[in-house]
Image (cartoon, rainbow, N blue to C red; front, top):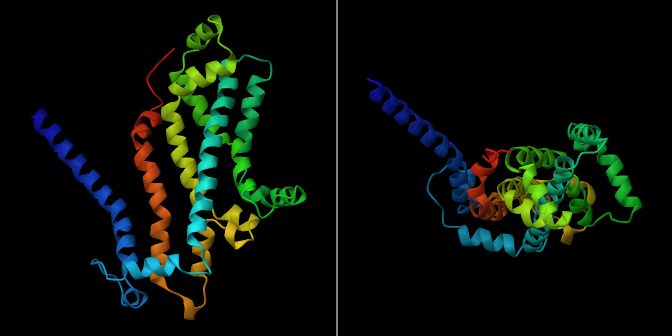
Length: 280
């Protein structure tokens, strides 16, 4: 009887997972299908069968002088890649400093960082824009990259991972052996933090890749625009120049790097989210 119940629960779990997988993948399928259809075909309504305008839509996007899509892809790759690298390294470094050292203002520093976490980006946007304008960094990619050094959410994740997976005895042993602090962090701590770094790198890359609000405030030159701005520009075109096939093709191009990054780092997601299993 118990075996039958266990088998029934297993079947139910598989059914639920199949339904969830279908719901997640269905929208990607429709996106790809729509990228193969022309504007006239898309106006006719939904279709589960691919069209014959894939190459045409791709050429229209690539050859559009008003929207330098390849430059937009490069700009988004630079911003997202740099943000992912900077936020994971410096957040892990900050978490290591709070976790591995005992000092008088340790709790106050942790509380201060967590207080910044609840502050919405929109609240500080105007002050941020005035700051970068006064510093001469407006219409540049630097304001999209440099602020990622300070990320309270990633810091908290890294700190929690260290509490679960980084024994302090290991740090003390490295110090006794004469290892310098940065050497200990780079050669011992970072390899242990690899699952957490991979998870946050994926989340940061995707978040930066899809970010529209800050780039729209900062970037004014067309050759410095990121993909979300270009997609919004294409969607905002006048009716005579509006082409839904181009929009779907551009969105398809925009999600390809995200899928590649996810496939490269996905094996670390489960390991990172479970926060490891090494206890002190």
